[in-house]
Each structure stands twice: as C-alpha cells, then as structure tokens.
Image (tube, rainbow, N blue to C red):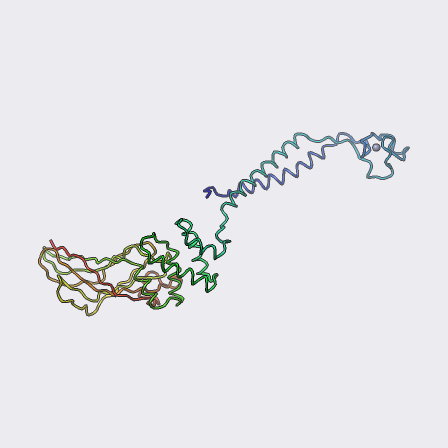
Length: 330
Ligand SMILES: [Zn+2]
C-alpha cells in the first residue's frame, strides 16, 4: 500500500490552475482586436466602405443586412496566453490524476467488501489479511451490521482461534468475544472457556523481610499475554482462596482481597492481591495456591476512570486456577 498522502493544497492548486487555464485559453484563442474595420465573419473579407453600398459580401455572398455576419475588427490569437493556459491545464490534469490515484489507493476497500468474503478471509494463512478482515468484521459486529448467521460464523471462528495458542493472537477476535459476552450471546460454558483461554497466569511471590527475618509474603498474579480485545471493555478481578506451603494442608484465606486490573489485548498485566504473615526458614519453598479469577465488564462511556470498584461492573465469567511457584528466602 502506498504511504504517500493526498496533498490538499496541491490538489486545490491543481483545480484552480486547470479552471483558470481553461478560462485563459478562451481569451487567448479569441485573441485581441487588431483594428476596428468591419470584416465578413465567414470569409474575413474587408468590408470597409462597402456596408452602405453592398447587400452581400463580394467574396462569399452572405447577407450584410444581418448584423451577425459582420465582425468589427480583425482578431489575432494571443500565442503567449495560449501557451501559458495550456501549461496550466496540463499541470491541473496531471496533478489531479496523480492525487486521484493516491486517493483511490487509500480508499478503504474493506468497508465495501461483503461480510461473507471477509469471513472467508479469516481462514487465510496470511496474518495481515486475517488481521484486517477480522478488524472490519469486529467493527460490523459492534455496529450490528451482520446477520445472525454471519455473527455465529464469526463468533465460532473467534472462539476456535482464541483456543489455538499456536497461532499469534489477533485482538479483533477478542473484541468479538467481549461483545458477545456483554450482549449475553455467549453461554456460561463459553464464558468460562473464553476466560480460561484469555490468560496463562503465573503466580507472583514476594517475600517481605526485616533484618533478614521473613515477616510475610505477598501473592499476586501475572496474566501472561492476554488473548482478548483491544478496547479495554473488560477487566480481571482476582481473589486468593487458599495456599499450601511445601505440600502441607491448604490454608483457606478467610477474607480474600479482590484486586482488579484493566486489561487490553496483548498486554500482560500483573497485580499483587494478598499479603499473608508467614514464618519460614531460609531456602526454597514450594507454594501452591488456588485463585478465583473473574472477567468483569468495564463501563467505558460512563464516569469510570479506572476505578473499577466504583463503576457498575458485572461479572462475565468466573474460573478457578491452581497456580504454584517457588518462594526463595535468602
Ligand atoms: Zn464574406
């Protein structure tokens, strides 16, 4: 695709130059009056002194009683003006054609494509094709410009695509998935599937030590690359349910903190959710945890300014995750 852009000033200049050129060409062609002697308009015969005595042109015979047949003075084309006007017209035509070609190359052909052919593009092995077509399809889904059958096809492909971790993620599929959850098109099972496939969470363990003594550990989650949409319409809420140290009995967290983070497609947010007072010997310790992770909606048009707790959010999907990692104490 061409990277050049339409130059508005140049385009206007070309239009003005072309129009002015046509205008000047008329005057140049019409020419300037050389004298005021009457001549026959048809054959240019000099009629000086003949108008009163003759009924007809002596040369070609047209009637001299008709005013339109007599021209006052000879005219000569103004060659310089004709040359300039032709140059101006040429500049106008060439520039308009050139800028027009750029405009045509920049027209959004995707907007004109049929939804069915865009859906076919999703099967394309060309990732650029797939990305552009899915973005246009997501736009049509968002503005309700697809039929129920078309929506079902797009949604089914988006679900399968999200589950296929071997292929690079395309955010527009996530936009479709988010929209389907917000519009209650997704079933409960599909919601859980969407959440589970959206993240590959890992456990964050941060020891807090004072004078070399372990006082507590903070636990959190790193989402991994997020396979969701690009609009930040959804957020992740996490709660630590239980933890077990070195294969011991799992301990239930009585009043789990809920930590919420806005997520955008492709981003990999992390958050600390819970601080637990703990006493452990120096060395490596295996920590196993269970978490409730929720996908919640975020109001984008409302007053919500990142403070998700205050806005009217709705849980779209909930899933349990078991995560483990090693806590190293120096
Ligand atoms: Zn004549």
